[in-house]
Length: 302
Image (tube, rainbow, N blue to C red; front, side, top):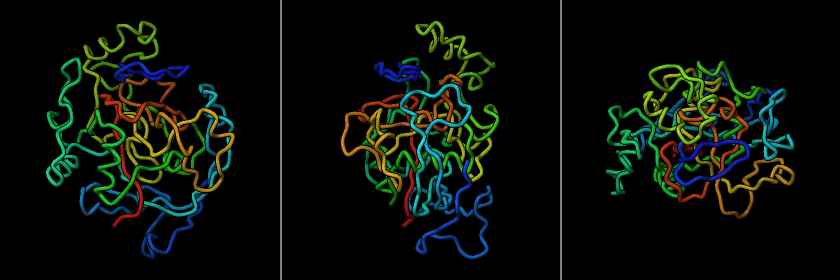
């Protein structure tokens, strides 16, 4: 199964600062009196999927390797200024099992896998409907977001929203904001040490009860977004290119025009600590169905 490491590699199934300016589009801007830039910022439910969405204000940030981050890969550079010219709505959590069930019932899509290779119960077989859906392909994620009247976020939008005005590699003390290999099981582990024996890594995580957790249990970032780091990797809209940051546009970049793989962000419950960073870029073919891949939607609420 797949776990991101340096250098990046694909291995079958995956297991594995600048404060934003509150410049908002008139169509989507919150009503007068709403507070922006703190966890109390405006949220609205999606009319179809019932997911909670938070308003993300327009603004600028430095995209790529964070200052003093010693774990950055070459494709996280060069650091470059990016402007997000219009505010947008973003789901406050990854898409949940409950939301996927609404989609499934509405459009008749087949159910997602209910177990992984170890027998871990996932998706509609999970005990909690607040668990994130996983083993979702890029096309399935895009289809869900389209049904909900939304879309997948661009890679730039995702990083901008995750940073929420911060400039560090993450938006808080890791154990307070993210489920990852060290803390997503019954006992605390040293994931980096376990990963030295990659052949037994996933078996040891399974034996310890590591797995995805119900969304929203960890602390949100400054814009009220939960699980932007850890729990599940999140598909973005963009194709991947390792050299894209050298040629990226500075306003609303949307990734290369073509490619073979898509970008995922954020890390997952089985990721080692060094990969749980807002600038880290994971890449996989869009058809991969991986038990730690999920997603969240963004865009203009209908």
